[in-house]
Length: 301
Image 1 (cartoon, rainbow, N blue to C red):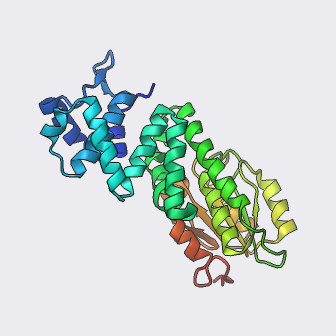
Image 2 (cartoon, rainbow, N blue to C red):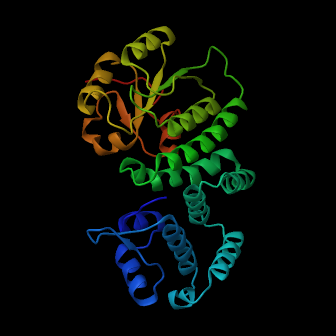
Image 3 (cartoon, rainbow, N blue to C red):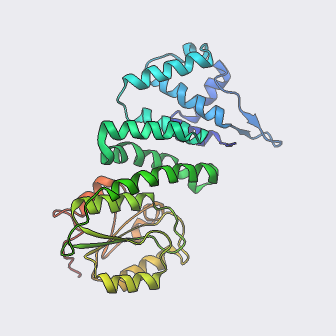
């Protein structure tokens, strides 16, 4: 059972904490539990309800009307709006609810319908990636359980692997891109998607996945001589982050390295020289394009 702060509800629902408190007081939309030290917290059911309330309220239904709805009526209204609207925030919220319930059937149904409608790349870029960003902070602060994280990660990972497997292998003469995660880094969903985009673009991508020791990275680069390297750094590396990026710069001086992830966003001032930060799939696609920096020679001053 999840245990959420009001800030967690704010992040996942888009409703300000101040507004949630007003709704609690005036309309008893949800009633928080309290610890022995009188600190309020919320359950999975509270989170699901506030997400549904947010959806209805954002679609023009007054909070006083929502407060009078039964649970059945609330769910029916949400379903009706979900079927009629194309707003990306709606399936994102539905994925959050399926994650909280660890409902594989619902999660699969939502993703499959989106892929049929928007294609794999469009679904991942417009829905899945923002969904992962939305819950990313909860992963960092351990506000969702390991079971919920593993549930979500493995279902999405399966979709990405199937999509990659459906792409043709580029010829050996294609430019080479090496994708890796540093030692201790387990969050590979973003990197897997960049592997998909790289191969779809026509580059010969070499995917080394999770927890690659630096000495093995050095050896792999020597073997494959890539034109570009890509990594995502979400958790704290085994060595301090400033030392790690310095190591990347010094050991691979003449190779552009694209970096994303929580640690990169938090330490952008350290990303210099042959290192290039990015945070969104569209940025990545630009960087590996002919107009970007990814596969173009870099001049060093």
